[in-house]
Length: 413
Image (tube, rainbow, N blue to C red; front, side):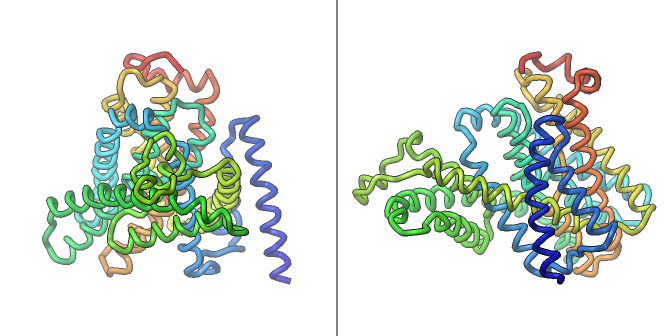
């Protein structure tokens, strides 16, 4: 009977995911929010589904979803968009992350008994945005290509920053010594080498892709190779996320990049993905994203009312501090609508939820507070971001929010 109910639930989820997508197109109510609320309803509220039901598969599933989201989004990037987005990308990313760390840890120090070092761990965990949530949300928003690219790369860089800085702070707490130079070198190295490996693997796969297509049912082999690339890069301590994104970009733009060195050397012309393969991967990613957002909703844990209120305060502070940062870092040519959306598309995600349990497992005092606050910030950041996106779509409310950016940014769409 349980199997029957599970199968029925899966079928209904897929059906409603398509319905939510249609609903978003007509009402601008984000389908991401609706899927998240479905998971939250059946998880923490009704206690029908628990994270423990997924076991280790849950984390594997979320990682697979992230890999494929990055791989698919890599195909949608343009070289010109990446060049234009680079102007404000690093300023926005670094300033947002540091400001979020300072604001979050400052509020926590003020209202709890956590030490500054422990509070900074919470700030690092909640300081970034989630690429697994940001990228699907951007698919539905009307923004310039370079604005979307900025937010995509910011979220990916943030994933790495959250992980590296959090573990560095934990190590410093345990050993009593923080090596800032080593941490910066590690962050820079993981981006550069991960990107380079993504290019190399993509070129190699583009050479054998034409031969692979001869085999029956070979479409999944590309996805399998993406997993292999991610696994190898992560094994050597670099960012598998960056490699997956670069792999997807190169494999979708071989002809435009005019890369024929491998073709001349091996006497085989590189191939890029065709429309049938892109359509198939898009369907796979859609299904995985559907269950991923439900899984996030299920994974949220809320118990302490006081900490929930404190988490809401931290979340609101993060949204407020984002506004002046966007004003300072984005070029004047950025449309007001894009700048507005950049200031509100800052949801936290599963990466933060996973990192939240690390201080507790390491036996760091206040680990339970960090975990509960992080879950609460993830919950409220997704809800508030989705609501603000919905509100901005309406002229009356959107104009009120956009007034903050009117003096600096252009009126163009």
